[in-house]
Structure formats: C-alpha cells, structure tokens
Image (cartoon, rainbow over all chains, first blue to last red):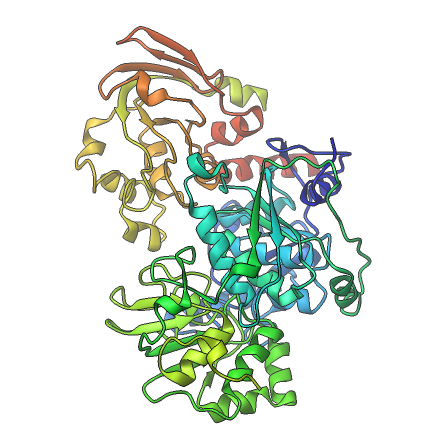
Length: 426
Length: 181
C-alpha cells in the first residue's frame, strides 16, 4: 500500500519508513510557530515548571499578527512580555509588529515554508500551507510541550481525496469554491459518507487553474469545517516560486498512485456561479444572486483566507478609478509587510487610498477575535474573513457575509452585495 | 514510566450520568464566557460544569462517577470543561468525540474512552457502572451488561497518569535534570 503525501512527510519527520492512519507518532517538525496571543500562557506554564530554556530556539518562529496595534492595555503588556520572551529564549526569528505580517501567509512568501515542510503551530489556521504542498499541525496550548521538547504526539490522520473537475468561470474565485466545499463537508457523514473531523483534505484533478494564492484560499473553509489539514500537490510553478525565495533545500512530496484514501469526493467547479457565505458560517454557501442588492455598512479584505498579493491585486482591479460607496467603510489588511511595501511600490496602495479604503497593518485584521475594525448592532458586513459566526468581529446583532476579494471590492464600491461580473475590472 | 501507569487508578466505579448526541463544549459542557476568559482554575470551573443543562450537577457527583455520551461529544478544541471533570474525579465514555476535543480531554488528564459504539443504549442515568480505562472493559451492574471497548491508547495513558500535559512536562523536566547530573 502506498502513502499519501502527508503520510510521507510525517514518516520522514518521524524517522520511519512509513506511517498509517490512526498510528500515534512523535514527529520532529522542521520548525515551530507561536503567535502573539499565546506566548504569555506558554511561557508562564514553562516558567512555573522551572523550564527556562526551549529545545531549539533556531527552530522557533514567533509572529505578532493577532493584535498588531495593541488595542488594549493587556495587549501592550503582552507585546512587552513577548519581546522579553523572544530575548530570553534566544528566538532570532521573532517577527514583531510591522516585521512580518500574518504568520500563515508571509512564511510562504519568504521561503520559511516550502513544499514538503512539516511544522507545528499553536493556531489551527496553519493549514494554509497545504496550498504550497506543505503540512502543519495545530497544537493549541500544547505548544508549550513542543517548545520545551521539540516534538509532541500526533495521531496520523486519514486523508480524503477531493477531485476537482471543470474550469471555474470568470468571476468565480477560489474562495467561492471554498464555500461550496464547506457546504459539501457540512452534510451529515451518515448521508455523504464523508467525515471531515481530523482528516486531511487532499485536492487533485484540474488544479492547474489555481495559483498559489487561490490554493491557499481554498484551505480556509475546510479548516473551519474541522479538517486538520489540506494538501495540494505543488505545481512546477509553485516549486519555482519557492526555489526563488528560500535558501534551504527542499523536495516536493506527492501521493503514491496506490495511496489509501478514506473517501473520495468530486466537485465540478465549472457549474459554479459567484457565491457568498450567509451569516452563520463559511459553509453556508449560497449563489450571490440570492442576496445581490443587500445594503452593506462594512467591508474587509484580508485574513489568512484571502490576503496574498494576488488577492489584493484582484480587489484593486474593482477599486481602481472608483470610490467606496457613501456609508460604507472598507478595510484592507495585507497578509504580509512585504505586500504592504509592494502595494506602495506598485501603486496598489494609491488605488486603495484613492478609493477611500483604510489600509491596516499586515496581520489578521478584524478577523482575529475582533480587536479592530468592528461592526455595530444592525450593521451588515461582507468580508473575506475566515469565519462569520455570530459576533466574529463585533456585535452579535450584526450580519456578517463572506465573499471573494472580487465580490467584497465590487460590493464596497456599489454599497450593496454585488456580483463582480457586473463591474469591469481594470 | 510503567510504575506511574500501573499505580494510576484506571478502574472507575460509580453512577452513570447519560447525555445525548452532539453536546458541544461551549454551552453544553461549560458556559462560553469561561472559555473565552481562558479560565483554567478547576475550583472556579467546577460550579459551572453543565450549569446550563443540569444545574447543581457538581454537587451531586462523586469521584468515580462516569459521564456517558452519544456521538460528537464536546465539539471544540478547548479544555475548560474537562479540567472541571478531572478535578471532580470523573471519567468520560462516549460514542464519538471530535479528535481535538478528545485531545484536549487527554491533555488535562481526564480518563476518556471514545468510539464506544452505541454505549448510550447500554445504560441510563443512575445505573451503577464500572469502567476500566486501561483495558476498555465496561460493566453495567444494574443491567448486568459487560462490553469491551477500545481503551485509552498506551501512548496516551502516560499523559493521563501524570495528570495531563503539564504533569507530563514536569516529569520530563525532572528526568532531564537527573540525566544531566
């Protein structure tokens, strides 16, 4: 029996010839990521045990992306605490506010994550790196054990194969496809035969149409549906992208032809129209046409689901030469400082500012437990956030829709939910 | 390590508290505000265990009592409710549990068995149960039923025996210190 790509990566990191679903292993990750919200608890736990050193400081990447602007006294204190922690632990790869951006975006753009990488992260949205052909596992509060010992136990997950058929029509973005996949995964497993809890969702089929940014976008919604990982076999283009950005050697990993998949799903993307996710969850996919014309107050482009360079470019295409509609506030949150700089160099920042958008520092933006750019009761938002559960960013009495970067930008200039195909992109 | 696992009490004898399917962690097990406030103090959590569905639960249970649940117990990766159960000396047997919920329960040292097919059909609240989390043996003495389920895996028994991740780390660190001397 062959192995899936993720099984091969886990076997390599565990020093074993093979692994199989259900086995308990202790792989050694290539690196460890921890974000600004949880350093405090992890260090306090370790300090209380007298563990003042971490296993391998050179393998740790610390990022400040959840509360970049320190929107509370607590956050200010936490920022100071985190800087001291990085110094005391000897962590050199510490991307403080303004230095890196979103921890699930910039490491792919800077070559920290390449195809074939395995890493452990406190945060579950690390699944984003499946877009580049890598895999990462959420450790939650157990990140303390990973920091102290360099590893942790893991159960090898089952893998589900998702065969993409057809070619997406113009105006249908990867995020739209993601919402539809979310709806498929939300079907009760008794009727669909697919259980997504703690599974890897591996894409296959007509994938050449999807760029790196598109693939990353499609990792978002399955994660919200409790997939533990998503995986795309890296294209030649993506391998070249990574080679140009990293100094470390790497090898792209692919599933064997006779790999074991727990179940198989199919999706014909050719038949899809632009989608939104209705308030309540990213799996609540609906044809955009069913809510077209819905007035909006708030729009936000960013989050780990849609903040790579290409996402920003797509959004800018609908804002160039237009103004955000009266009564609407549009927030743009690039995924990385590198993108913020490039926006300035290549004129995108001018496009957003001319349109009347507010550019926030790279990071999670409003999506991270709602620390900035919030919505009020009765307001309506459309965004590219990863989730739109009640109260995700602000009042529980607000309505939160999700859409693609194209849909959010087109809606921001129109003042209501708008099919991007109704506007010319330029 | 074998000593710690061997010396740990894996055999629970107590009353059954039966819950249905799809009981989420937030609200179903423990009120959500305690989760978002990152409250991990067992004494502060205990009075709120099942507070929204079964007020006064914590005053009626005794160490050794067993919570039996249907499918999909404890949705969510957080551990606040399991901290309270562990501190009260309870065990959990369920038909299924999302993996990260299971992981969270193990991580706070709660004896837990999942994938116990149809176990809710073998017992009712108030039945006298006996469960060996190390062997997977399940007895309902009230109904004279005996059943074998998948036990807590060997590799995870160590974590539960040491009281969860923090206990595991504490012992690991002691071993590191000893090895260095």
